[in-house]
Amino acid sequence: MNIIERSRQAWNRESAAGSEWSIPVGPEVTGAARQGSWQVILTPNRAVPPDWFGELRGSRVLCLASGGGQQAPVLAAAGADVVSFDLSDEQLAKDRLVAERDDLSIRCVRGDMRDLSVFADETFDIIFHPISNVFVPDVLPVWRECHRVLRVGGRLLAGFMNPAFFLFDHDQAVASGTLAVTHVLPYSEPASLEPEARRRWEEGGEAAQFSHSLEAQIGGQIAAGFALTGFYEDTWSDAATPLNRFTPTAIATRAVKPQLPGAASSAPEPHRIPDRYDQPAGQVEER
Image (cartoon, rainbow, N blue to C red; front, top):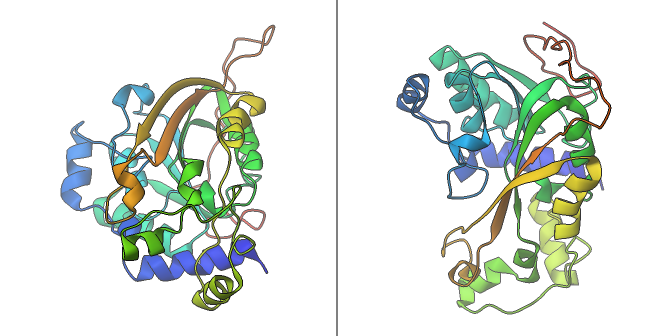
């Protein structure tokens, strides 16, 4: 089974159907961002602290697996030079829709978040990566690629699920109102599902989801070469899961790519980002 292609198709369907994470912001939101009033989220509810971004205006920002017409347009309206990189054609189309409607500069690349080979080393000042690495079986390549494409001093802002979230069957919990530990971690679809649940999953076409340990999420960033400089937790909603009443379900981190001891202190020449990509990474044509 091609897990990544299944995820692309699943997110195309969700986006076309108007998923919660696929409703483009209105012109009043981008208009306010142009005037300096804006906020974005890495996790379901809590706004990212403004000081996590540093100087945003003029910064080269990669919105990683963040399509849907929500974060990328706001950051572009606030003055950033934004590239939106996402697996889903429909999610990227939402970013283009807002960019064209509100005269924003957003360049779009379709590809797998684990492979940023279309970008040169030290291309970006900021990577904005809201909760999405639940859709890849191994998160460590994501952190390594983020480290590579960030300039020295650049910031990785990432959101991810608390691994304890995956102990439970949340559809069952919402239906019954009762939480019961159901899965052993690490959770991996479809391998972690019982036969009947696996059959329904295979027929349903949902994107495969995977839990990642805190060692992989936080330790993985450190192993990739990052220094963590910020951390917070967030809740979701009772409608999403009864677990919300008992514990935060999401985590956000800010990490910085430090300069190696003895390395030259001069900043690298900025890598020019082509105006528009529409092909998968590795098959990109400038237009």
